[in-house]
Image (tube, rainbow, N blue to C red):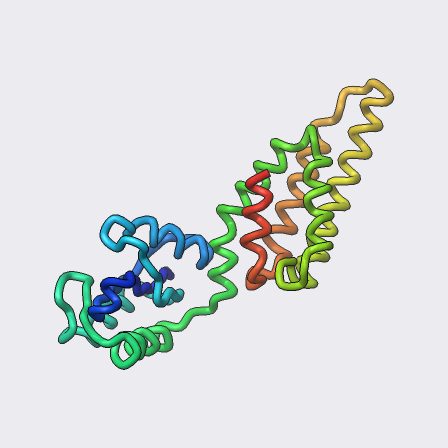
Length: 217
């Protein structure tokens, strides 16, 4: 089991050296987890700020260990009052090292739910696959700091080819006034899912944004 250890505060609490620490089992990529975490606590921490968020193995045990390290600074259940740079941050770094995890493997696990949603989205767009082809083609004209890495660009190019083949075959069916073989879409979905779930580089920092943009189509 894995989860995230976090430290959140806001400008007012930070001025008074007050921080909320704990773990969350939100099973999402790190940026999505941070967003949901801040939304969850915005009632208590207006304009909340995430000071640190990192993945660990055995998060319940990691949280218990963190609280032991900072026991003398605990003011409430998960609230601690201490200098961040001198006390809080070093304790968090110690936990990060003690409960280190293979981020790559867990990143893949965290993308599975979103990838399945993407596959459903593609299925929804199967009658207008051109929209997805245009979107994917834009991926190759993005700035270097925005586009997927080389490996994932190749994978996305492969997916684009799958879309184009599907569009060509369905067009041919329509021109000849034949009933479109439903197996074509099933095969397309199967190929796309294999690429997304097995071939992608899940450490690519822009992969999450790419998937989100497909879901926004």
